[in-house]
Length: 540
Image (cartoon, rainbow, N blue to C red; front, side, top):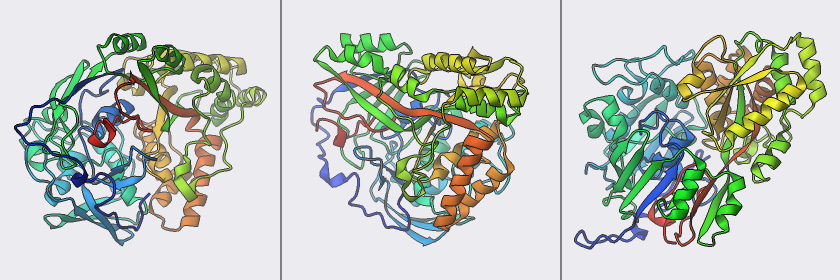
């Protein structure tokens, strides 16, 4: 996290270091096709609507950019992107200097007015403005403005991401101030997170409807949308006025290929240049052909099992605790991931620095303890539904099958319910009980994951799955306190509640992502879902 520190223009991507070419020069740049299992869950390209791993892959670095971002070539450090300087005015106010000469896809220059519009009510919060208290429930807020209604999730995501936001003050053309209602040591991290990207004020205003905007946003990224065919393909073309230099690709095309075998076969036949989400057991077979290689590894994302404590059986925390102890996580890592990932210390990452709880552990695999808890709870074998998608995550279906057998061995009668989309996964009903999910560490503080996804405005509470009064009170304290020692103690207590006493979820393993490509293509996979096709990651 960059906190109370100035970010200088020379860090990160340097526009002057990349070559520019005369407009009349022949365009010999390659066109690349990437096979993905899914392009967008919402069939839109708006990050506030598409908060997903598949969205991060196609939206970040290629289309959208924020004031700050993450260095995908190293260890995901926060770096300046559209900003050149960030300066703390107080615990609740940050001043930002913009990079001059940045052009949107429509040719307009980026100014502080565009930033203010990007964090404005029309795009993010709706007519009601930022929420100051209480939980924003998905489905309760749907701001209407003739033909430009915000999807119900957008204000929910905005309030989850920026809970203390009050306003942007425009100081001059290239200077602005972010003003929070409350102190927040994570402001710089929030500016770098997925969902804090900047759009063209004029481009947004000129879109006929919100959906038109959501499918062809006007941004500053190195590539711009040429054609988006929902559930089929996304074609991007070079934005040759890109501030950090001429993009290395003439065209970048993402093609939706749900089946792993089809992605691999298309890669080997030359139909695709990249194939994403390769299961570990397929890596050796691909690399037997010396023309191909597989890159990737662990990323700042953990796979979870999530509980709905309003379900008749799961109301009793003892039952949920039994779930957590019945899982042999190491067996999953070894059998399904060939040891290519790890079991983390709960919902946290080492890049949290001083906030990282190094002695914390996931619940111990203990079938006897799970059975004891079920007896104490009076569980009689009632069926418990388990909702998941068909391999939306790598190894999702085989992991679910293994989990069901582990739970069965402890006495839990869990029954898989395959769903077609996330709306069906989250649909509130008497049968909603357990679901499959993942959580990311969006910046170097536990607010970015534990509070963002499970706190008062986290998705779990927004969809009505979970609530704990002490946990919610501590969430607010973690977001607003500037006392480092106290924040660390608060975080520990929140882990105790959400992972041990009154489980909201249980962590399975750290996620990993693997991408296959032709070896002759000089490109490096990022330690994240995002794929970087900018000049500094191509041909080097």
